Length: 64
Image 1 (spheres, one colour):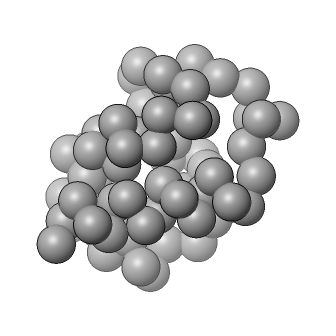
Image 2 (spheres, helix red, strand yellow):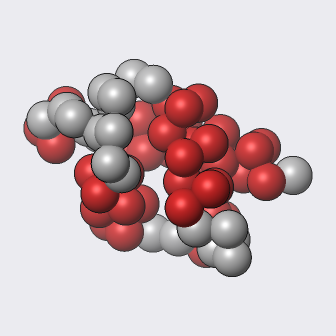
C-alpha cells in the first residue's frame, strides 16, 4: 500500500484504531500509524501535509 491509496489507508486505520477520534489525532502520530500498518510499504519522504489531511478526512468519513 502506498501513500496515494488514501481510502484504503483510512479503512485500515479505522479497523486498527476503532476507539480513536481521527479529528483529535496530530499529523505526526497519523504518519507513524500509517507507516505501522502491515500492508503499508512506501517512502516517508513521499508523504506531505496534503496527503495526511486527505487520509484524516477519509478516516473521518469512514467512521461517520
